[in-house]
Length: 242
Length: 211
Picture 1 (cartoon, rainbow over the protein chains, first blue to last red):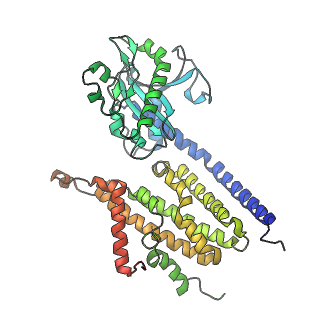
Picture 2: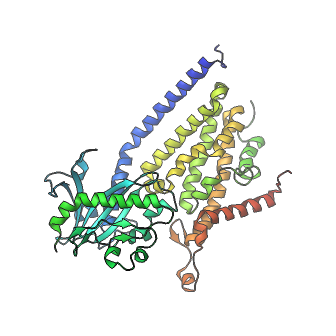
C-alpha cells in the first residue's frame, strides 16, 4: 500500500488525472471539430451577407442550406494583391495564415450590377481582437454596412460595437473625399460626430459616434479602419467612378 | 447497503437543493451567472442545463475518487474534473447550438468557477457515496435552474415582450402606450428581481439568517 499522504503519491495522482482528462477532451474536441468548422463558416457567410445589406433580406428562420444557397448566388469571392489587382484563380479560403500582401474581397451583385464590396476588418480592442466585415456601396466610396462577429469586449461598454445603433452609424459615411481627392478613413470620435464636427460638414462625413466609456475599443476601430482602407485603396481607386 | 435508491433520505437530498438549501436563495451562490444569462429564457435554460449536468456529474466523479484523492491537491483535482466537463459542454454547444454558444460566450466557461459546483464537491461529494452525491448535485443544479428559469421568464416577457423569441405581448398593448421595461434587460433589473425571489422564498420557507 502506497502512502497516500506522500508527495510522490500526489504527483502520480495528478499526472494520471491530467492524462485521463486530456485524452478525453482531445477525443471530444476532435470528434466535434468538423461540425464546429461548418458552424464557423456559416456564421462568417451570414455576416458577410449582413454587411452587404441584401436587397431581399434573408428570412429570420432560414435554414443553413438556404443561407449557403443565397451566398453562392449573390456573392463572388476574390483575392486582390497590394497593387489592387484581382489574383485569378484564388479564393479567400486558401489564403494562408500570416500570408502578406493578399486581401480577400467579396463582391455582391444583383442582376449583373455590383451593389457592394465587402472585406474583413480586424483590429485590437481593449481585451480582445475584433473581427468584422465592412461593406461599401457600388461606388466604392460610401459605407453600405458593417458587422462585428467576434470579440471579447465588456458587455455594455466595448461590446456595444455589435449593437445596431453603433453599426448603423457607419451607414452613408464616405471613405473618400471627392473635393480633396484623398482617402478619408472613417474615425470614431468621442461623443457624437454631428456635435464634434458641427461647423465642418465635410469631416462629419467620415466620423462616427463613439461609445461612452469604451475609448480603447473605439480607437481600435479607428485604427483598423485606417489600416484596412489603406490596404484596399489601390483596388477601390480603380473601380471608383468619379 | 440495503437502502432503496429513492429512499426518503435520498429524496430529501434532491429536495434540499431545490428548496430548503437552494443554492441561490439560501446559500446565495452563483449570483454572477444568474444575472448575466437570464435576459432570455433560452439562454437561461441552456445555462441551467449546463450547470445541472456539471454539478451532478462532477459530484459523481469526485465521489468515486474521494478515497484516493490526496487532500493536499484535492481542490486542483476537483477543478480539473470540473473543467473537463465544462469544456465538453462548451464544445458540444459550439457544434450543435452555435448561436446560443455565442450568446452565452464566456459564461459557459465560467461554470468552472461557479461556487455552487466547487461548493458541492467540497461539502458533499468528498464525503459521500456516488449515488447520494449525484442526487445532491442534481438537486442543487435544479434549484439553481428553477431560479434561473423564473428570472428568464420574467425578464424576457417584461424586458423584451417575447418568450423564447415569440412575441407574447399583443401589438395592441404597444399601440395603447405600453413600453418594455428596459431595466429588466440590464443587470440591475435582474438584481432587484433576484432580491424579490429570495425574499419570497425565505418568507415561505421561514428561513432567517442567525444573528
